[in-house]
Image (cartoon, rainbow, N blue to C red):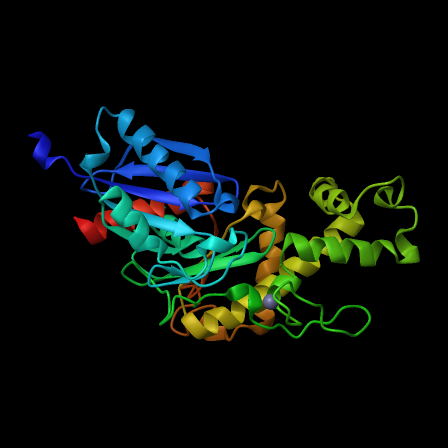
Length: 340
Ligand SMILES: [Zn+2]
């Protein structure tokens, strides 16, 4: 093979703290290791471009190639964007907003770029890791908030007309807090799914429950733990079978499944992949049962199994497999498909 024939494609996943990057060859196989560099999204897009260029150099150096051998880039960003333009600041510096990041970066590196948001990228990564899966895939990934993405049957990301689809954390669910109110969401609305299924939600819920006299002797009520620390420790408590922690996660899982039922009613993806930190919990099998309880409460029978064969599940649930490389892998795959 002559040097002119070498074609690689890069996936660049820009997060709040790190940029993860992966290189694939012309058949979509990963070449070399995943490379991580620090993210500098809060220092502006120019600083981030420098880090992206550094990632491209490190990626190609490890296989004795050069950046000019990269013929296409898939880039994902942690903010809503449309046709290459960032529409919402999220955790970025202000100078990203209203800028065509895709075209500016493409011009800087001289390589064609596809850009989407991080939820879509991770959904695509989960799709790619399931090599023989050609159906649809809905990723639901709780973290600080609740993100997700949809891959259509056949393997295309569904971004919506304006790139604003799949904001699944902000569809409403009919669950109320103990005081009868719909909980407030970070987006400014009330009653969002994210106000129940996220780390932010868990912080509110643990404080509300701990105020109940029933839990006055609970270990999380002793000492001077911050709300963040209490929410963080809940997982350990749940893994040891603590009643309060189990109650909180059970409620969360049930509401999660209930919300997923409406997403399935809308998209019928066939496969729902649950990602985020939940995928690494020791008690995740138990958690999945709670999700399925909530799902069964709200999903129609035909969204659960075929009327022709009760063993033929029309919606399957799986845990995420891609780990923290899913976004970069998904983007490398899309770049290879688009630009080869
Ligand atoms: Zn919201």
